[in-house]
Amino acid sequence: MAERFEIRFSGAGGQGLITAGIILAEAASIVEGKNAVQSQSYGPEARGGASKSEVIISDTPIDYPKATIVDACLAMTQEAADKYAVGIKPGGVLLLDADFVPREPKGDFKVIKMPIMRTAKEDLGREIVANVVALGAMIALTDVVSREAGEKAVLAKVPAAFKDLNQKAYSLGFEKVKELMK
Picture 1 (cartoon, rainbow, N blue to C red):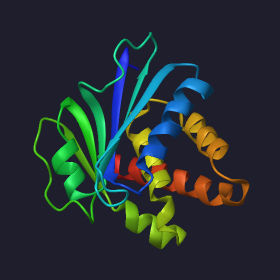
Picture 2: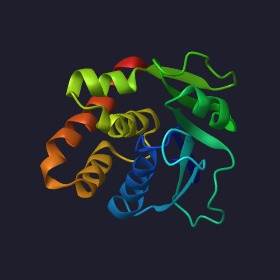
Picture 3: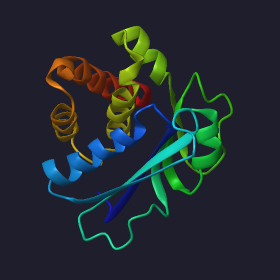
């Protein structure tokens, strides 16, 4: 891992992307013992407006808690892609929800398209876990934490009745992106 790794999750308010960022930060800091900070920003709308969650992970102390040069970005909606898929470093990666981001942002970064919401709905029967599908996908894309650390953090965060569903969602996102990267 680079000394400082920056990840941005973006989408519409209510999609659970702030929660995904918190879980990633916990996987890095609590499970793996790295330094991590998480910040969030969202529009004045309670649901529906563009929102983002940024996670910075480092092996050394983090001196500035905001993302400056993003290594990896997720955009679940076109509005989020237009607003937040900026500042991705050359050679970085952008993961788009293939169904909700028809116009691909341009830049010197790799773009991966995956139908995240559709995957959650069709494969798991629950769109509500699309954020966990996306989290699994981002961890698979970046290797910023181990697959096991991500899964452990997910399972620590969700109620007991939903552990199986979230574990399946996480694994599905992880495996689907690994397939896309082949």
